[in-house]
Length: 202
Image (cartoon, rainbow, N blue to C red):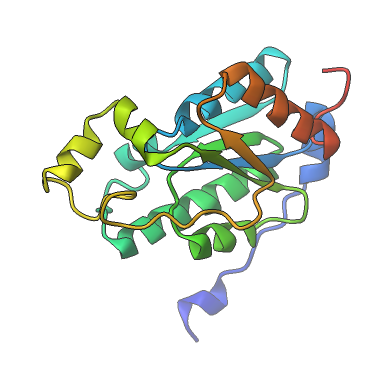
């Protein structure tokens, strides 16, 4: 008998519906995807702040923070990037089970990886938010100087330069990364309201 055969999912006495009832809202993940510099981290942080300010239990999973701990053993090869996204998806699933509204900010350039994460969740729990910002705008912003390093050959397999970004096929929201943050936040809140994740009294 292998070790896997001895591992079974533990059913908690405190269930997700009970946690959601106590929280006053449902659990869900807002999966922000887009190029480096598209504005996804800014938007994820802004929606986390807005939701927290109205009493929603929320948490932000940020790419850099994850690589400081959970994924510090991973590099930036295609296989390592896929494993990075897999781990984030599993953590997000646990947080949704805890009844939280989780915002994630990851380039997650491959459609197959994003689909694999989506399949971890029940219907109406996973919302893909594509921050659609042209690469030239991202390069102009270049907050970490990464595009310049990629152009100079100092960074290999950089998404948008020498590694592809696969545009989401049917995201729940397509956000223009050049529009005011307040406009994007209004669209996100409306999405959560339409899907009964949060209530109108917020």
